[in-house]
Amino acid sequence: MIIVMEPTATEEQIQKANAKMQALGFKTILNRGEVMTVIAAIGDKRLVQTQAIEAIDGVREVKLIQEPFKFASRESHKDDSVIELGRGVKIGGGEPPVIMAGPCSVEDDKEGLLKVAVAIKSAGGQILRGGAFKPRTSPYDFQGLEETGLKYLAEAREKTGLLIVTEVMDSQDVELVADYADIVQIGARNMQNFKLLKAVGKAKKPVLLKRGPAATIKEFLLAAEHIMYAGNPNVILCERGILGVDSAYTRNTFDIASIPVIKKYSHLPIIADPSHATGRRYLISPMAQAALIAGADGLMIEVHHDPDKAYSDGAQSLTIEQFEAVMKEIDEIIKFKNARKK
Ligand code: PEP
Ligand code: MN
Image (cartoon, rainbow, N blue to C red; front, side):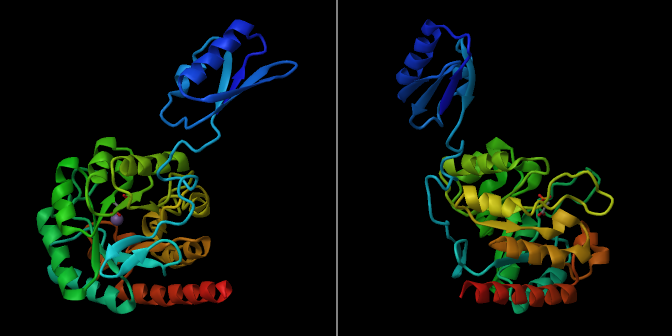
């Protein structure tokens, strides 16, 4: 950490700031310039309130050198994390991309869900997605089947061998959802629901954390930090688009650059969700391919057996046939990437 003193700071103020840093356990080096003095404070600053240092008279600015997140940071974990998801599926590092697909909501048509699950498995997907607890913008929209939906997902897992990922919206439901799911999802709207992050931090299942629609990359990684600090190291990040200036053509702005940025600053796996990022069926394939080229460790894609009748997100849901075609295109990209590695 660097403490920049005001040019007008008195010797007494410089000594006071220096002593404060030492009292907090930092080794300090004073650099006296012609105009101003800076104090280099060496040590782990993460548990120090920088505002308290900025409040010292004569301090102009406190600059952080290390990232504000620790467990999620590459500074403290140089190699990519590889997370075991169950049934031999791993995500992160050099593992093949993991494909999570399925309907937006688990609906009361169980046969429809099974049909989609069978198709995902035979097209080469590993994980079935589907919301049983749905975060809806309007209270009049379908809110999800709750535990019945979890049961349908578990049945689809038994029939197909796919793993399941599903969202939890309330800290009180974490145990219930984690009992059924292989991966517990935190939706974009709850990325900064800190009580919920702490609750999934205590759960024994990996967590898929989606980026909030207006969250910076730093806020996203700090949300992951909350889960990890609470005791769960198995966090998978998901870029699902952020609010942009133009929602006429795409639902959100797919921040593809966040994938390599996050890979630079964090060791955690990151997947992309082109469905929620774009909101349009025809954009899923190009954005899925782009995400893989950018380094995504997996994809989340919405697929419905009859998208026109979907209870939610029909416009962005692929038909089974469209999903199969996208999987072939993804396969080409994976082959291309593997060939380049050699
Ligand atoms: C979802 O994946 O079901 C979902 C609601 O997405 P998001 O939280 O990204 O909006
Ligand atoms: Mn959806």
